[in-house]
Figure 1 (cartoon, rainbow, N blue to C red):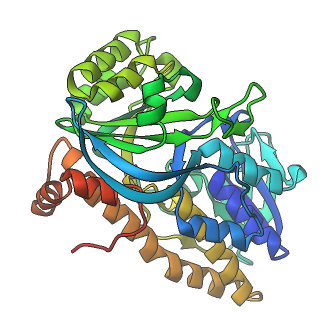
Figure 2 (tube, rainbow, N blue to C red):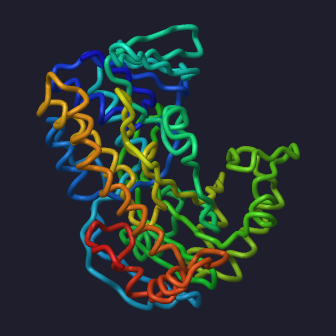
Figure 3 (cartoon, rainbow, N blue to C red):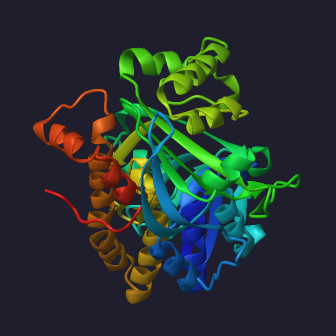
Length: 410
């Protein structure tokens, strides 16, 4: 089957590899021309992610990530509130991206090409994709793996839009060699938390970057990744944060290199006053902190004709479960499996795929909302208020964050 995948980051690569493994004629088109592997930050892994990699014949080497064995919560006065034994591999987004990209044929990966339009034939269901370079590609299946702002999803489900959660994340990292001896001993080996008023900090070690932009877990080059979730109302605080050094504001996001210096200065000052001394010290040394407004999204469908959505294009969850990468990998394996079950009937295969993955995607979004409810600027419903009360206990946060060991709540 001729397959066009729109979006060449982790979800698109997982999907391309899974379909290629089953003999499909796959091409990937990615809008970003270069340095995609330098985007993103840290990721936490789950067993399902490694299962998906194994299904593709990818066995991560010891240099894939860093094994964290303990989580601990640090109070705002710097004392330890509690600890919890939990083994988990953490790494950088770019480390996984580079690994997957190395497995996919370079001649079939087209970077710097943006989707401009989609037309689906009423006669045979084939899909024509029009790209920014003037190319038109006809395929029997088109897959949207192009993330939360998916152009593919906007064509088949235009009413499905990202929903702002009411808070932002300040993110960044400090290179291991730049940490003090104390920080190398008491912070770097751990997944740490801090719970200031109207916020939450998580931090954990991830792969570093060499001078050649390769991701590595070599001691000294590794990084300590830190995230601070902060309440930010949409109409005032968020708009101020997203207004760049030139006075521009797209209302959705902001590039790290145009965040206003006074905004960064205010963040560092707030960190010194509100966070543990250990975490505040990290924020003081982040070279280029960046702001991530938190959104989630649910598409009403994952399939329309011979078009399918995978990963964040279909369901984008708040980051608290750390399941975005794993969910995309599971979507990819499920789609390839469904096409294998019905090799002569694409519609039956896509229906099976949607049946198998729609509820799973919705559940991750729902659970992530529950975990993040107490960070919201406002609580619109009684259920949100109940979740906010239930999920701000330090021990519970430490046990529930970035884990797949959870059950859905009513």
